[in-house]
Image (cartoon, rainbow, N blue to C red; front, side, top):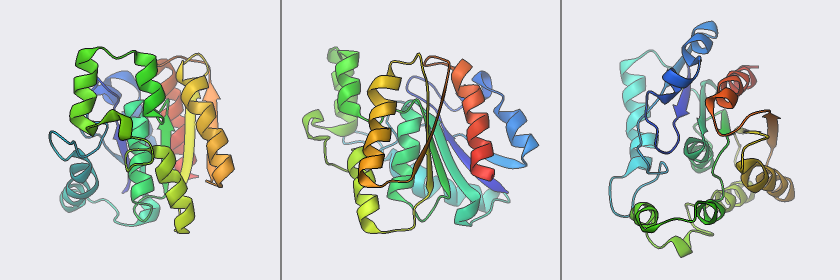
Amino acid sequence: LKTLYLLHGACQDHTSWMRGSKIEEYATKHNLAVVMPMAYNTCYTNMVYGMEYYSYLSEELPAAMEAMFPLSDKKEDRFVAGLSMGGRGAFLWAMKRPDFFAGSASLSGSLNLNILFEQMKMNESGIRRYTSVFGDLSKLKDSEHDIYWLAKKLVESGAEMPRFLIGCGTEDIRYETQHKPFIEYAQQIGLPLESMEGPGDHEFKYWDPAVKQAIEWFLK
């Protein structure tokens, strides 16, 4: 089976896509396996003070899934997508492992964490939470946690890249602060990127039709 790794957002869990969207219907229609892991609020990375969730996601999970289920081990049959924190995770994973995926889709993705932190006006508990993940938050730029930096390094590497898709609801605060700036940046550095947008806020009313569209885009 072709496989979609589908990532949840912050303060969600592995059941969120099942409860908030028609993902089962879309998977059945396209004969697609969908793997929905749990990663808490870790931003799908190896935490400075905590568990190594990126290693789990990128190494342990695919090995286990492909051993237990009849999933294809070919790059052209693997895809990754996610919403919000998971949209960031989808691009992070695909940019670090361009050899593993044919396509990656970020829906309402938190692609620039520094801007996100400013918008959140993080209180002390928020600072503690993200410090446990990343360590010194002032050092995120131009690091392995920086999607912009990873995108530039990927283009410079000359590696065969997955196809990248970015989507966001036009009423979402991330539309102006995360979605449009990354499209402009991708054009500047030569990262192949397709975009889609539609009415909706940071909610499943947007993400449900968006993931349906992303799946059709992956498989076309």
